[in-house]
Length: 478
Ligand code: FAD
Image (cartoon, rainbow, N blue to C red):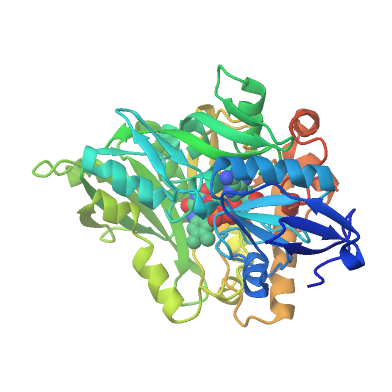
């Protein structure tokens, strides 16, 4: 049962019956661990799963996985970990983290399987109180019968509330509502000091400001009060093709200013002759019997004539629109391949030329036919200090959602090197990373990423996780 010897204490095993960590050969020094409502799992299959994520590139094996039976278990684990020099990271589920570079992994530490705490406690008029392990799809299924939805939804809604609130949560409604972290009213957090703290703009505002998009550095989010807005039950999705990327981005910026749609995104795909063709995707919510006026919706847009189309669907099917594609990708094995993603936030004025230059140098082999997505949102609606984006009124998210085909280590290494190169070019024009992706970062890179708030970020670490117990996978602090 030898597990790992690289900790401050050499942990060699956990005896569930005796509820102790045995440190050192022969269990000479036995450290009692607290009684848990849940379980600590240590079997190799579970540990191997916890050493994987959607990226399938980085693998760090933990000593144990905590399946918490209560919030108190997380308090007890963090307190224990802090005392014994063990590190801890929360993950959406064992092997179900949607990070692409080990952000939810912890070598020789403990991964907390947040999916074990996934209760929707209350749904009120304008908000819902949920455990952090709740997936957005579950919340939506519970709120839609009341005509309500979280304001901003990610494109894929099987992500966890705690996971996206720790990184930001961007979607095609962000131009109207901000990120998911901007639509939270209150959080319950277990800090790196092992304290269970409620925070909001009025209560513990330092922690509130730190933990939203705080990359798991300051606390484990255990519960969130999520804002809800009324939504109409039907959605008309508009698509239109552009040969000219700059025409599309100009239209996207027009649309987020005039607000004629409820959702605005865009993408690039292969044009069949070695280049790229671009598509607007926009949506309007409507009540049955009162569909939007297509002529008004498309007026003045500069898409290629004759390429516009509409599809009507339910709000839920629209929100869950990736599900059929993902089921297919799982079936053909592509979902399980390495995903060295690149996700950037670009300053509005520079974004079109930058994206064009990147795409001109990108081939289908470089993306493995993974989606390329880009759309703008408004900087002014963002309120979480550590959600780092360029300081321009419009910010574009630009995502090269690569699949490594072939899945050889050499190809993956090459794609990560491309990510690094593009990231450096983006940084030179004031761009930032969306740190869910695969870009190797040094501590100096992190300082640049969080600039000019790195002193505040470091201070928050000192205040809320002084012993660096939490979320080492981002490699911000060494
Ligand atoms: P994890 O990957 O498990 O965790 C993310 C990070 O947060 C880790 O560092 C982890 O340790 C930490 N963490 C997790 N839970 C907690 C918690 N409760 N408290 C503190 N820290 C925690 N993102 C978007 O913004 N918009 C999109 O449209 C979008 N689409 C996606 C589509 C796909 C197919 C995939 C794979 C990802 C997508 N993402 C998108 C990225 C996604 O937001 C991130 O992967 C995010 O990390 C959430 O994933 P998760 O719930 O699996 O969390």
